Image 1 (cartoon, rainbow, N blue to C red):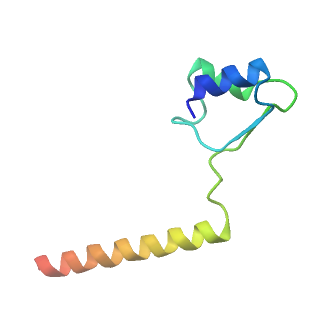
Image 2: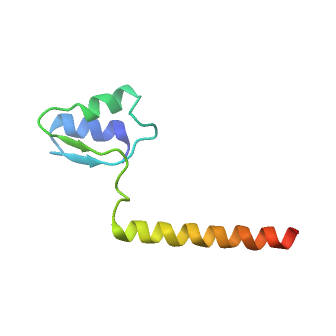
Length: 80
């Protein structure tokens, strides 16, 4: 969802709350982002990009990293 649209919906009461995990820059720098994270009464719950901190996500990331290392090692061996 587009951030400014989310802010409008929250302020209008059409959405009661939002949980957010990541912004394009952290901490938020755009004015609409600052307003979004400072809405009153727990309207928004904001974390500092920790949505991937689950066992399943960490396992997937570990496998992906290992596969990338293997690919690069194979490519490196082919150039030697």
